[in-house]
Amino acid sequence: MIPHKAPSVLRLGPARLTAGLDHTRRLDLPAHRTLHGQPVAQDVGTLIAQVNEVDMRGRGGAAFPFGRKLRAVADAAGAKESVVLVNGAEGEPASSKDAMLLVRTPHQVLDGAILAAEALNAREVVVATVAGELAEASISAAVAERRAANVAGAKESHLRIRVVGLQERFISGEGGALVRAVNGEEAVPPGRKRRASTSGVNGLPTLLSNTETYAQLALLAELGPQKYADVGTSREPGTVLLSVSGGAATNAVVEAPTGTMLADVLDLCDAEPGDGVLIGGYHGAFLSPETAVSAVISREGMKKAGGELGAGIVVPLGANTCPLGEAARVTAYLAAQSSGQCGPCRLGLPDIARQMLALTDGSGSQDAIRRAVRAVERRGACFHPDGTARFVLSALEAFEADIALHRDYGSCGRPVRGVLPLPEQEDEPEYRLEVDWTRCQGHGLCAHLLPEFVTLDDYGFPSFNTVPGWMAKEARRAVDMCPALALRLAEATMVKTG
Image (cartoon, rainbow, N blue to C red; front, side, top):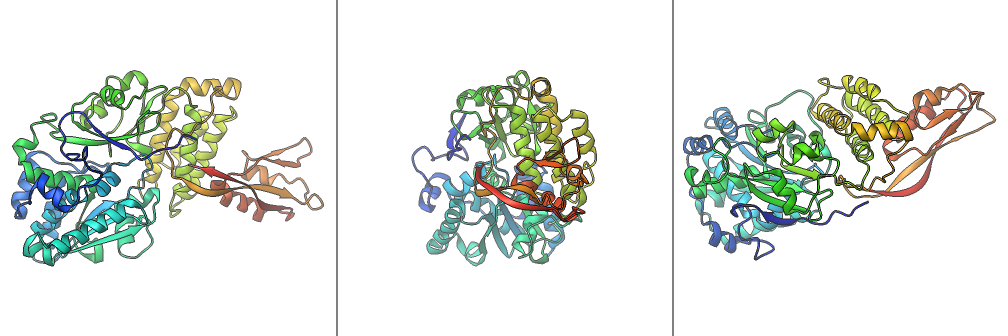
């Protein structure tokens, strides 16, 4: 596995969100004020007008118009209280931009959140981030700096700012799951769509957006719409933050104006597309090498290329890893990250992961995977099944030549190097199925339930392959359903994954 180091901060074009970071590890409050000044409070109408003038969109992936969110919360709250919620709980393993902002320039994020809170007459600002990480310590220190300095005037001095540390999971950044977690409930999507703008934190109308969005809001208030739009495209002005990792020689958060060529970003990070470039993260899509070199960094540009800009995730694969094995590895991770609330997630995603694993040794088929994908699409309690389906179908299309090699020869000859980043997990167990031969009667049910890990001989008796940790639940089901009570599940070797 390739180690994934803390990202550098690079840029193409002017320094905006990354201003000052060439000279200091972290901008404390005095340094931040020297660089960006003191924001001026605005009423909600003025703030919405500025946001709409530059068509500011959320930077967490969905690109929802931020002005519409502001208006929805203002209308729902009326004269009542509301809450501003900063989504800094990046569950996406390939994204590092929000953590970078919280660690290195936390006051930029707080300025934007406080501007929104003052405009909405909100009762508090809540910053949700991953518990125990450097980002939580940095944003907590930033809140303490503001309290000690008391530099923000009467409104900020009585505005409560709360930092909430959450367990890191892929679905932890989903809006409904985030609100539930902040409210002290289990951090899973609520099933039924609930709009945070009407009922979010503590049941109050809640403005929910991600870390970069609030940092961009502070920048817009500082520069004004006209100067803000001096860079970027006319339809999508400003800069974006991109998380570049994977096969890049330099893992980095890159600030670039919209309209920048993706090829220039890859060159900056000394990255070759190799077998393709993943855009938009693990609910995103792969671009072919030919498409990647001509793609433009913008929502419109990425859509034309067949991808989505999403949260600005760029992961070039390079040429030294097995692309199909990389995709299967991530699919297994996504299956394990399900909240398990609905059939498409609980049953469908492990089935897709099994089919992808079978494809890597040449025993599976693309048609079987597509059938498994159709069984989960548009049927989940949240977007996780659909996003996973998008990732898998994209991999089937992008890696067709590699799939043919696996089908014909059982392998493409390249190892799986772990280029696609996954969280470090300590001592994840593997399992083995063991059989009591005095009981086994050759029913073959275990092979039906776990076809990738159990094979039957000519007499119907089983032999077993090692079962990965993410399949332990299904393996236990096979043990429980054995008619002769002949099976048991034992822990095998301890492995490191990530």
